[in-house]
Length: 253
Image (tube, helix red, strand yellow):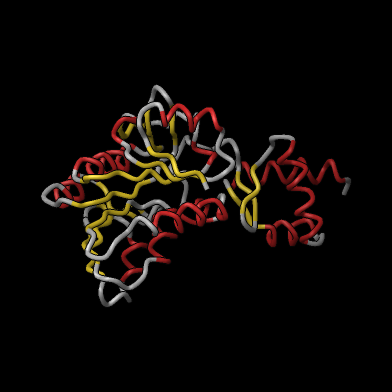
């Protein structure tokens, strides 16, 4: 098979599946994983797909639909882990915090130390991760389970969150736009995140560079509701300045 033909088929497969691992492509085309990595690097430079940790994801789906957890797990892993690691430094003993169902929040939960904390979340992944921490009190929102994101949403989730008050909310999103504010690809998720913002004294927005300039389907809140923005070094300086003009403290790693 010619290289050009393999590239064309790789694009088709990635767009159809949404995401795929290097090992799978290696088996499909009977070539080495190193060859596939070179293919993905070239296709990414051409804007045909986006490389991720251990695979590739389709650029056509970005911000349009809520992707399955597996697909979100392999997107921009290095940047998300760096953002999550920084977020942990803003958690203090006896804090009451709330974590959304984003993969970045899950990475944060994985690294949280076993200290006296109260954590409210609508994420099954976060709940399971913190279940082994003896000193951490975990409160689940309950609600309707969304299998694609392994999270709880709906009226019950929001009603459960409503009575609580937390020091800090750590949330992510699918889009950050100067005029549109922060948004998500799923309206049920955006409703829950809006409620999380409302019950928090301080709101930390956790987002890598790919989220900026994007307008996802459902608006969560205006940028003015955010107090701290934690992002990676690839984020355009123009976006950072626009956030700082709104008195948002930007922590760029």
